[in-house]
Image (cartoon, each protein chain N blue to C red):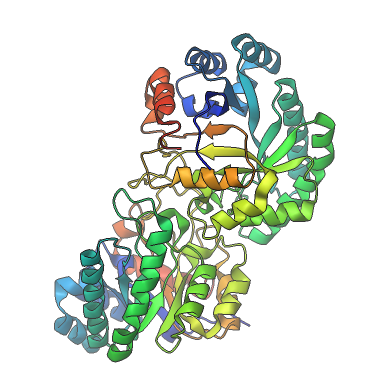
Length: 278
Length: 278
């Protein structure tokens, strides 16, 4: 399979312009650079309001492919757990209201002074099962995203595509659940090609950023595609071989670099790299 | 199984006092606190010289259970690869000369501008196979240590105990190869208990430190056992259930905290936590 640089498939996550732009500014920046897809960051949406956000997207011809992030379901205390489920039902409605087809869902990490990883995993799986009916009702898919093991403590107690596949086998709700493959999270995974093939049509989101050789920060130091160690074209080819034809989504958390730059420079750099480096 | 706090099994890695002590000072500090085991850091050994190091250990009644780290075998160019093999043969001789029974071995990461993870993995496996005869000749075991996926880029292209087990199956040299389980590296691993059971008698080193909830650095921010998120007693129980009876080795890289403290305070803190937190 050839990697294609179809402009209609390029998506830039709002979080890539996190520090520079509010909701409207990020959509304007993408639109004036010819990018027609974004993934909405929940904080930005909350600050703008769902109705205004929907108008801004419509007025600029920008589609929200997803809302990020949902989930965060590892609470031990029942009140916290049920409150988190309520939050997710609300986020599913938000996603529907802005036309997003999926809610990117992470499990959440360990609570304060918790060391019981098995409990947290079981709890998150329980929570996901409970979100299936409201997701169906909202017409929004849950895109389960395994995150890098370095954020196991505070963001996601599942860390591999292999686990995500196994969870989806158990949840048996492929009509409304899928997987978000984030290259930055899974590039190191030993059986990655095989697990991507196993995921197949379950892959409903494909996030791209690069691992910088000199990175030190565990969360906010992602690199521009082409600047790091990840063989992004290979991973994209594996996803396409598995049937993926959805958006190619650039999601860069970069406190020291890209979040400090002019948003048009960031977006034009992405356009320049697209099709060459990812 | 009960966790026991047998003082004879406690080992403190030299790297835990990396910033404060040279070779002699670290051995003196352990000895005056009643700790009889250490793992020697290669840089410290090189600075002191093998003959002097062996004398210092003997004079203080401190045993070197291992030399760290060997391996680093992912070079693409044949000259670099063969040079690395030569280095390892020398380190095996060093280990033997100080009475260390094993060389803790990591694969190495990706070279500059490399993105071919499969090549790096194959190369490291090839290199390990080539180290089997010299390890046998030196009477020193190679303790293959999977490191955390967050250092896949620059330290270790194998990241799970599951892969280490599979590699040892392939290498078929259990008389001279084993596995170093580092709790900080593998605590997040989904099938950890099963893979520890699978490793069984292959486990020849057990490294302990804790994952701090607020950690940001990918390499030098390990926590004192008991201060973080890892269920250390559970992991130790699994290792003991698999037959492990070797040293319990505290290995803390801590640029912002423990490397800035008085070495006796560090060691007494470890003694205080031993048997209670790990």
